[in-house]
Length: 205
Image (tube, rainbow, N blue to C red):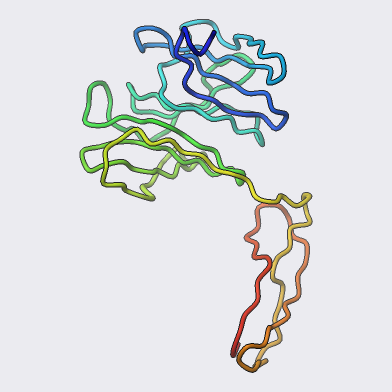
């Protein structure tokens, strides 16, 4: 009922199967953040109706308990407090505003915590990488077609914290015959480190 009648178009799932829904208000000027129970379907408004901006995309950062959304009218990305829907952070970068040459559409928070934003301009569709520390985004990909693409990331196998395998060392000067496999030592590292798993190298190393 909520989605059909009021234009809920931005979802962000929690780790328990519940989700946050950003409800686009009529007139495309404001919106309301809702929490939806994934089992019962019951929704609870987390912000005062009309208090939040109009957005075309949103996603929930389950690692930091934050909801990000894109404000296409003001060309900004906001971070909302999921408890009350209040705006706690605004991007430094600004896309087109008003009835400009482009819009901000979807946003996706990856399992690693990276933030990607989809936006259009006269040159096509852009996938922007947003730095949450500086609030600045950089262009990562340009698609020639100007359309409202949607973004999604899927987590792989997540190891327990502190147990992610990482290449630690390799015998210096070791040479292997073509077709053989080099054995690499691995060690547990802290979360967030660059990792490489299930890897073999053939030939000389």
